[in-house]
Image (cartoon, rainbow, N blue to C red; front, side):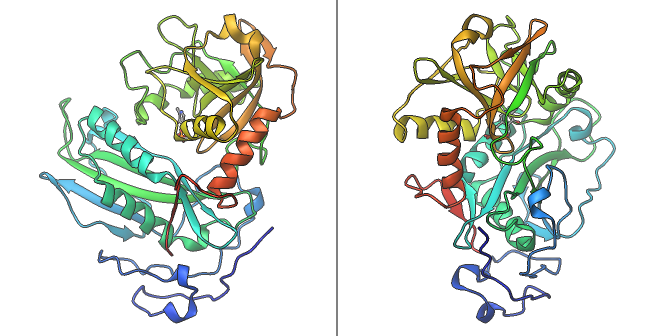
Length: 386
Ligand SMILES: Cc1ncc(COP(=O)(O)O)c(C=O)c1O
């Protein structure tokens, strides 16, 4: 189903009063922040092949940028250029003093633009910033930056029903010269957006495969539970090796014993067992996925399932797995059909390449709430007023 109520096409500086043309929930707000680019108020959607978008960068009109130096943040603003001029000695380039977030904006059937639990992204970014000795991005600045970037790129938000969404990438990077190993003196908080399709090639609830990696992702007491770039560069090789044997992604076991499931390259793991329990690994080295935390809540409270977060011994418990899934903002919930470990493919349960009933149920519930199709009883969706 497709319902895009806005048809007016308007271009020009943000100061033009366009309110009279717009429905109530699309009126621009006076944000009080400086806008140094002509905000593209083109309300007509871009002519993209929405249903066939991949998960890749698409340049959009504006991005939000704020800078920190000498103990405080400046007034942020929307900027047009996707390029950042960075000093060659910047700590983000040499010592990976940077962190980021991944979120999505979705168009609801009634035309609202929804973010899913953005407060948790903000909180997670603050935790990463503290771990890497970077200044926290205050909640108001984080939310303002995200909302401004979404609003300014309204034309790039995939229409309801297209299967695509607007991926949002907030980032915090250490800038300025610093040859010695010490924290940066300046930082940029930036938010860019890009319309994206499914992370794993097929649309919707597609079955994927994972391959256990010989390469560790994160050390115990390291930075595995923070969304910091350093965790991902080290994982590129694991992903490449996994894909060489035909898997979609790497699956990491714990770095101490190579025994307990940690997570996939860009998603947490969920398992449903023969006795009807929804399990997820407990580990200090994995990213605390917002999608996973939401699914566990929904499974317990809405579907009446027993849920457990505990160490999961892959080899010892594999035979009890009925279904498995990889979950995250990008992956949404992708059922796992088979896992490569100990030199062979091992099929999960008996679903094979079919989607199992548990993953289907939690997917429908989660996605229904995220897209504004189902009641949002917990107030998880945050509307961006356009
Ligand atoms: C390593 C890793 N694990 C898990 C996730 C899923 O987290 P979330 O559900 O908050 O997007 C992601 C993606 O953000 C990730 O990069």
